[in-house]
Image (cartoon, rainbow, N blue to C red):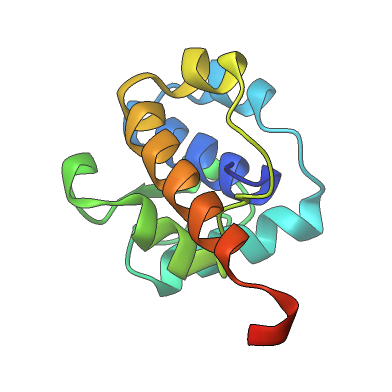
Length: 124
């Protein structure tokens, strides 16, 4: 349901908010160029701030711009140009990984799938 790009953005934000860079950086597998784009997108959206005189490619160079509870999945999707993938049912692994959020996203996914199924070729 959540694309790899969005998963990476969530992981990066969690690293920055937890200030646990050693553990988190290992979990974020992305190319340097992609990280530059992602960090720029999150900064431009006002989700994180680059510390003065810090290196813009290093996650630890950023601080939160808002409280974590003020950042929604929609904010992250809009910042990164991401989307939800409702093409398949949600897996048990997804529920285990995202907990409470997965419950809400599961409902969104199921309702979206129902409505998409009702749109036929003749409607398009």
